[in-house]
Image (tube, rainbow, N blue to C red; front, side):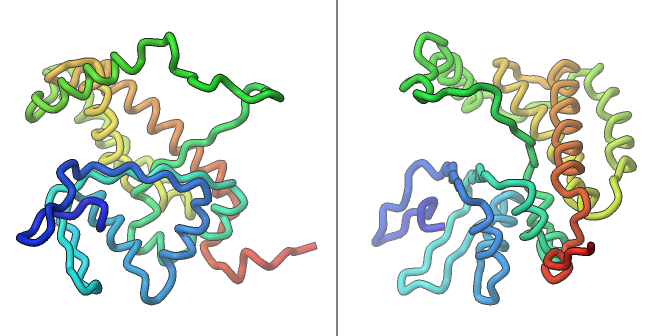
Length: 230
């Protein structure tokens, strides 16, 4: 909250209120969110929804009206099954995250390249996409993408998995439309076309299957997760 605060009469605030938070041990964040006096869950949910953020528990209260916050967390499937509780499922914190299953693909005994982006040109491409996104304004679907979205929306709304994985995937429509928007802006477009939406649907499908794999057998009850049957 303090890292994306608005300016006040006595505080210049943060001019660029975009924040990417990397959490190498995401289990610690899930633990913190369950504490009785923690506001982490409510803050993350408000940030995802685009609502103003407000911090009133400091000597100098802070407010952020237009922050853009992203959290990238790393956690093992076993830790996720253990720390995801019914509370995170009920208040909607868990389903505001995309779960992406990742596996090691190479063995690098001497480590990777010191600058893995060197020679790829990705910095230039990304800079161009960001510059375009700042002036793109409001994006809409083209005709074919709008028709596809109407069909896909119905399928996403009804394609619910059972159990905890289903609860995690409860915001399929919202995640998919955000992904389609990112793809369109990355391509330097001002409309979302069929290719962008198809790419978003494919990535969401992978995220849903990742959730099903990672949370298979999870109960959402911390006590039950400690019980092992012979």
